[in-house]
Image (tube, rainbow, N blue to C red; front, side, top):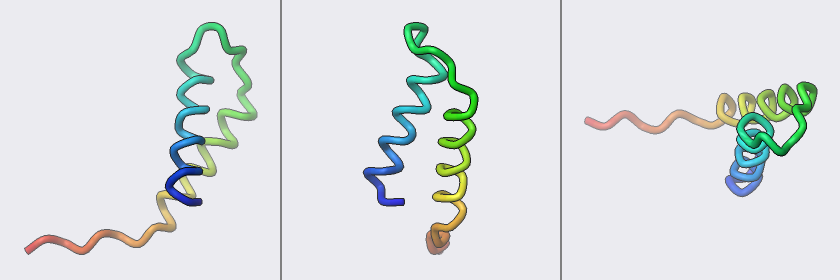
Length: 50
């Protein structure tokens, strides 16, 4: 996922979880969480400082 896609997914997930006017969609929450999880685990770790 690109950085923009990650930001959009995070914003949608935040809205689903925290906006009382948005109906909860558990399947969508899990799908977004899975995409974000795989996006962060596939990135190469940053080089250690020092």
